[in-house]
Image (cartoon, rainbow, N blue to C red; front, side, top):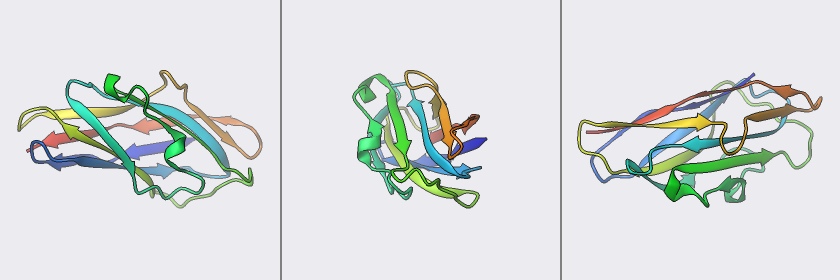
Length: 139
């Protein structure tokens, strides 16, 4: 099973918050896909930054509907040899500017819509996906 974990962040009102995404169970993987979702009236999507996974570029992120609160992700290891990462390895950051008042929190979640969860290994087995959602707290 692949587990991706989004860290929580605390920022001042109007400041950009980047949520680091780390991985557990990243063993012999050649691909994954999923979507991020959030309330667009509460967060403005800003960027994907600090990509550290091999073959992961901005082209792997579909932000066409970011104004509606969704960004899709689809990654394939180009050599298909499989990637192994140590537990809690950082993959990338997803960044937002909160639109809510001080003292409020906003969740960013992993979601199988519109891009269904899929994780595949070198044996072409479909593995289970688990996501730990992140939260932005405005101080």
